[in-house]
Image (cartoon, rainbow, N blue to C red):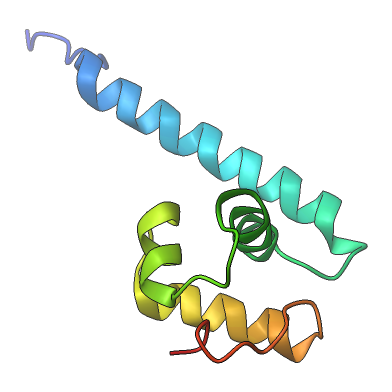
Length: 95
């Protein structure tokens, strides 16, 4: 007789998996809430980061560092907000 395979995942991978599931669900729920304002969760987060953490227009590098994202990703999100007229086109921000 073959021993039964346990379906148990070790604690650390399980915690990581659960955090990812929660993060995805939160992102989905927030995207639904922000849909009426025509912004995504990432676009809202970028706007809120600028408003809350900076007194002057930040660089993409500064934003990326604060948001835990890449410069390229932040630039794409900022450009979408600028196209929607929700983020002013400040020279320092688009460098």
